[in-house]
Image (cartoon, rainbow, N blue to C red; front, side, top):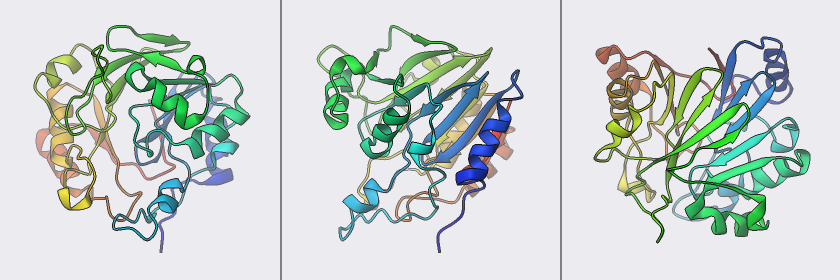
Length: 279
């Protein structure tokens, strides 16, 4: 039996719309996998949205069945108030045409941000011209008011770049309303990572905790222990775990994440799909 999100469909939309009345605050919802909705003063940013069953259909009757363990929070076509969407890399749970195309239909002015290294791939997947997408590189922030986005390298499993040195796997620093949110995308630890991230004073770190298990046949991520440790090392005021509780074959318990954060004295939060965090 699949899990129910904390909030889903109309109750979720009611919560999002109600939060807009509290304008001084920054609000964040976990939508499952690595998908987060950020709201500030009536503007909305979607990080790596996966709000379809495209992978369940794609991998049906294979050795990697993507069976959902938690129901979808919301249909993308119901989100007709989104200003910016980002994609950290080309894997479908981070660049999903069945999510982004409905979002584009109901948000005609939607900005879609992806690494410059992935722009051609993303344009082909979404069947849009390159000019429809907004490229980001490590050396140049993208400002889409009220959000300022900075790309940082991610290693999934390794650091990979195109011929111009643009990273194919990225994380994002999101500056908005005096806050800094780090969304790592999919990543392992790599040399120099902590020094790069410590350039920012991070209020919230959104980090995967599903770990690395070659038997799953998918690229690895931080484990719960590593995510809590990284958050501590970079001085994050709060860490939120993600990239679990979506697919049965690629999930973990957050227990080790919680225990490590508590041992290190690292503030943390464990969210359910569809649950809000307000700062």
